[in-house]
Image (cartoon, rainbow, N blue to C red; front, side, top):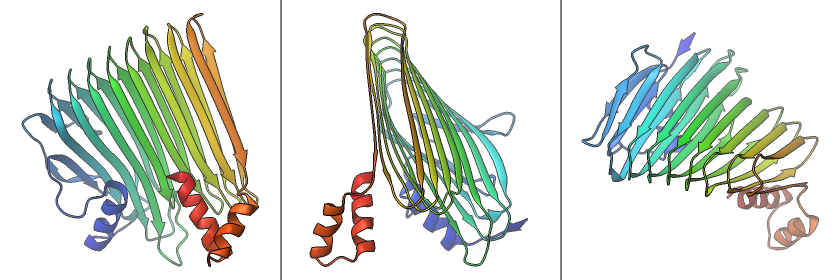
Length: 312
């Protein structure tokens, strides 16, 4: 197993996955090659190691507002494999931002793997914005793969609201993303997902929202682009177990010999559950390419511009 202690690599990856360019402010925990490299708690957000050593606990006091917690992971070791469990206990009447993400720099010929479990318990009437970014890079001339399998479990108490944004930027060879949410009365969740695959990469996303309380709601939006010979599989399921509203939407662009499978599902267990699903898969329109090329872009630049705009 090869380990690199390269601050340039670490700083570049932290900038990609967490927009960190200097020492973060507020609460943070930076994990580097399987170990906590630096950590800071605040009066309202406490970060502690789990007793079994598998990850961290983040405890946020009732009434905490306008605070951010940042917990990025960096792997810069070819062949490094880890499983991490982080638990967030968010009190009542909070309004916080949580930034997570994992970046892998593979410098050798062995696969590097990160398997992360994030479990959220969101108190009554609290608001949480959760940002999660994944990024990978491989040194020229090496063949090691970057594998990332995140699991996110969310439990929303009455009146809580969670907005979750996940982005797979580039460089992840294989990923299986599992997201589940249980949403109680008057609570709501919005999940926005962006995926980009190329080469022979594979990405699978499996999202389930169970609406168990009256007036609960879920809105799941996935945008993905598959190029070359890559594959994407998107599965979403909204379960209406109470008078509620739910919407799931999947839009995908396909190019080359890529494949995209979209499987939106609705499960209404109650007559007052109003559930909607949409799915669309298509190629980049020729007139879009032509318009940009007349403005001076090459075909490759035009395609890249369209993809970037689609994933924003």
